[in-house]
Length: 348
Image 1 (tube, rainbow, N blue to C red):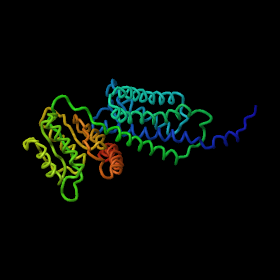
Image 2 (cartoon, one colour; image 1 turned 135 degrees about the horizontal axis):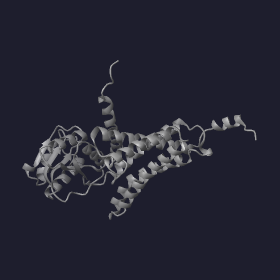
Image 3 (spheres, rainbow, N blue to C red; image 1 turned 90 degrees about the horizontal axis):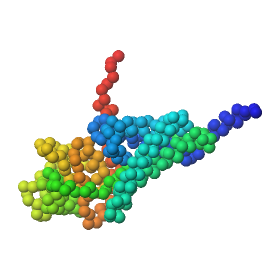
Image 4 (cartoon, rainbow, N blue to C red; image 1 turned 30 degrees about the vertical axis):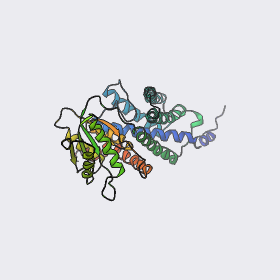
């Protein structure tokens, strides 16, 4: 039987199905996220087991680093060339299955939460990450088939990559808005993070919600000291705390905090002389995910509590969108810091 070589060449030059480009883009996006997470582990010595995507316990720290590194490499190879050799394709699918399994375990644990709103919010992150891995798995399984052969659109792959990273940040912010369980014993510090002050010099409703929540934690004996971190608004925050029956000797004010990360550093500095590094941090729900990430980098044992809102904030949807961008910047910071501070190579 004579083989039609020109026909085979024409078949090879055909465009690949659109779903394959989407799958490759999801693989690229997950590879980037895993790589950024791995860089954070190296720069800040955080846990590779309790990573951004899921909780890999009972794996050890070295095994967690191995899983992050090999999964990132495998997905990157799939994004570059979907028709992987058999052993590489199998290994890539195994790593996808590992993350899928741990996300499934997390969903099962969340299903036991009694409160329906809390259960729904907590499910957003593992379910969203599970779907991203599922999109990649479709391409990994079918990458070697004849129907998937051809040239994928790099524009479609790029758009899919950006959407994967963006969707990851959105589900992290949304699911992270659930408050942590308050510690059974009193912690040394309850910190309230400042924010935008009203134009007339009074506290905005945003700050009133945060300070009121922090004061309630002090009066409920959940914390021993109230730390108000911000800039010019801290004096008004202190006045409200005094009105809320918090003793003056239990209130500390720091007006040198310009943003969330600097507030976390203030909280870290306040625990250096103490053997107990536990701290409760109060802010609005959409900032809690970034608070947890920043606190882990500084070695704080943080309990993030969402401020009890009386009403939705003005332009809250816009503020949530800005927080998604801020979270993405925060995820990239360890890699940028490593590249900027990495030692230069030997001089020629």
